[in-house]
Length: 282
Image (cartoon, rainbow, N blue to C red; front, side, top):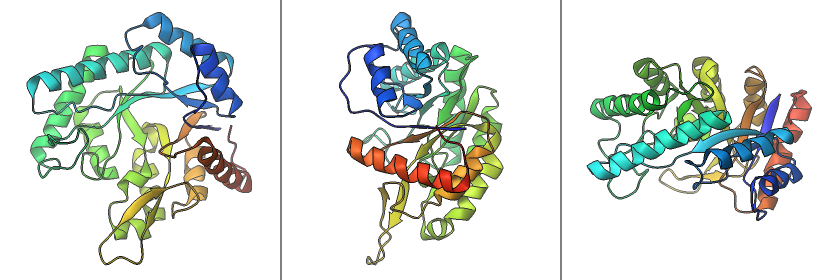
């Protein structure tokens, strides 16, 4: 069974109200809702308990910082937060903790840079990811990296290379196939890309993001944008079929939409596709 999830827009105070708001929207998976309780074990466990009582799994604890920062103090702070969030994910039994690998950009924490896709940066990613995992030694969760067009992993093969190089059982895959669509070739062969993702990364996938991509066809240069699932070219029928072959309870998390109504429409598109294919989705 695939578990569909999304952010919530209902204000809440405390774990019970948060879990009730997720449940009221019909989601069976949830993002970790806080940035400020990473060191508060009792608060974290209260959220996990409230979710479990409503049959909701916590798909991911996000970090979203730059563990490859060139400034030593900034890098140390980023790595420490990665370790704290990974420990929280392990404590509550989240499917994964997720961050980007890091960037050499000094302008934007996740931005492009000429040195990002070099062998030297690949080695730095391996080193810092080991540093994060080895400090925590998680038993119930996994540390994962969000694919990015200009940051490792930028292809299924580079993700597989990282898995082999990092060589830690607690390192796994958070799959966002749209983030691998970085060229017209990938865009027009997106079904092949999806199949490649699952063929190479399937055994390691712990959580997935759900979005879509559309390329403007009236521009001279390449211009792609994220759109709501169902409004782009991602084959959600194929995506769901591949997901259904993985372990039970895999979370599929909607993201980057503006309103609760947008998320409901995206969820309806995915549920309709699942029903057509007799894929069980909660």
